[in-house]
Length: 412
Length: 222
Image (cartoon, rainbow over all chains, first blue to last red):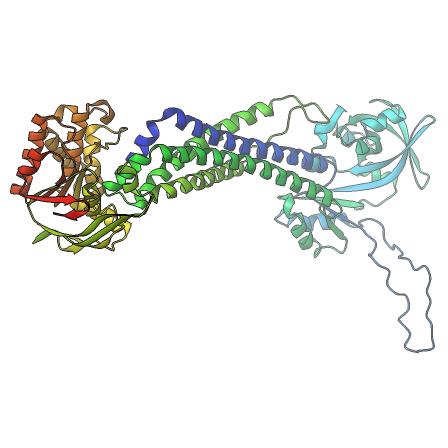
């Protein structure tokens, strides 16, 4: 410890109460920063989780070309008027014909963390006279569960029962209620082509998204192919998850080279999700920075008071040969120490607050407690901001102290 | 060699009204001299001493110490110069109350950084025992008597073995016995170590025992 640091330490420890107040203001700022950001990130993550419970990061499907190609070339002759009314695209193929080959290609891509094929069609679910339209998903149970953790949303029955019974069906809880069936009951599914088949309800799913719960039904892939009379490599959609969903767009571009089908990352058509989580982040940072700046003013105030109180000591130090730089160092060391202490305590406090919030019951939708994430990034940022702000708040009074003229003070 | 050389010093105070404090002051002090600056209150002797101490830089004329012109140096250069070459004893002790007696004495030497901490502590204890206050070393500087504080301040001024020791009424708060001790120390330092002593004083007896007396009246040398 050099002389200036020793002086700083002595000056700091001689006023413990003041030191405590200063440390507490930093502690408060930093713990609030950690708390706000952990909570907002938790909300974002929860939101994303709900979204991705029924949607994959990337969807591959057979899409119509965006705009109709002109049927006839523009005429060269001046006196000819060319009129083609009501052009439309004709879909020559439906769905993905050879999904197994595509799946093999996907398995080679490093960024892809998982994929599952689906066969989605609109159907009617009938129970006696009650009839509801719904979307039927033929799923590859194991892959589906890996991607969407579907089994965690099962409230009755077992997802894997679909594999064991070719006439098993799982309904969204809302849909089951609408058509008046329970697990174990039978119902009839009819397709738009007029094919009807009896299924037995083997489970109920509640995802928390009411639209999904009221309109979806799940059967095994084989059952769906059979129902719609498709070959054994047919699917309407291939759902792909990537390792980092923020990079879905880049991976989608890469995948589009492998297949002629439309490759759609989740951001396309879901920009509201993107923007709402960005907005929440902005609010969190704005609020927590404000708190930190207020804490910074607290430190500024305290350091300013200290400088005014110690004005005579500063003059004496200067008379003894300490220069302006030494004085800045002495006072800056004090505020940085305050920042460090407040920062470390703040990180611990922030963590404790988050653990408490994490256990507050919040039983809405699929949540049971308030959502919180623990990210080292938040803690590092909080500490860094805390140190920067205390540094600035300490520098201004220190600069003032360094400019002080000792003669004026000592002559009295 | 001249320890101190002052030529054509003029100093004005501008607040509250313009006041010509020091008028055309020139003198020289030899190495090892024991000089007293005397004069009535308001004659400008303290002001002169602050100019000599390099702390006050607002004046016309020039000051040289140990052959080096200090007029015109910047604040940081002056601080380093003060630290090494000048020991100053204030009229009031001006110790740092948060520190112990020993720390107060050691600080200027720690700043200078030419000796190890142990050597500095040893030297500081030596000075304290010379001034008969060695048993106070671990006490807080705020918790000793006024006379003791003044002696600690003197020890602090001596710690770096400065070539010039300046005192603004250095014995003003001391009884006659301790005044005698301090005077003897100054005298000894001047003779044996060749350190120059410049003291502002009201004490006629103190002044009469000095080698040289500079007397000021209304800002002029007499």
